[in-house]
Length: 338
Image (tube, rainbow, N blue to C red; front, side, top):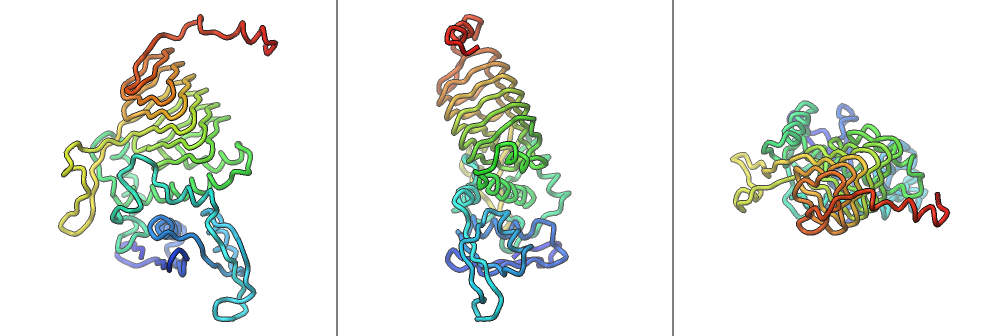
């Protein structure tokens, strides 16, 4: 059940992995209620299939945008009436994208449901509440990561990235258009490969001509900013959240009203222009990687890296400066490539 200002505005139900019903009141359409309910059904209930009336193209389009594809058709509905049904299933790419809460976050499908849009017994937050929560998240102060506004933003991000990752047959430029207005900035010529995940999206800023290989994760509670001409290998993570060290303060707690809270703070990450980050690197909260630096594969970056420096290791440490002696211009010329 989803609520706004104490009034029920939508509900969903499922049996096994099949969505049996999803309803949104006309007054709440356009507020993200349906998307939040569907994302909850996929992430919490494991919904993978549904049926939709073929004569309702708006509903069919809604599910298609969420990553469901038509796998069959029946000329009549379940009661034998002449209402043709489309049988839909969550596409394989979408199936991988929707449930996956970005790695490193305290949220997981096995956790108790947080209070948020479309979650049982909880209100749909207003846009003003969402703005306040997002501001607290990005500002470095302690905040409640189970805030309903932030949970709503996170569910929307899961939906968007599920659709993005499902469109593997599209040209990169066309796929990236799906992220314009969702990410904080998308520079001309930049590309995210399949498997990318974000916590919220609006705190991720990409410069021009950046390339991110498969399965990169951006936990953007605080801004994650890339300059121009940045290259990132597969399986890299950019992780802004920090959690209390004491277990009792880190655990999910409930107030007197039964509302759950998870305390967290986030610090920004900055990757300056011309940086190359090799495969399976983790960049932690508060780090700046200087212009032209190279980070070796498998590194865990916990401190700032100076510009034009080769660095690697766990923890990642500067090894030496990158100089003109590292140029491969002569080798390229000898091979006739330039």
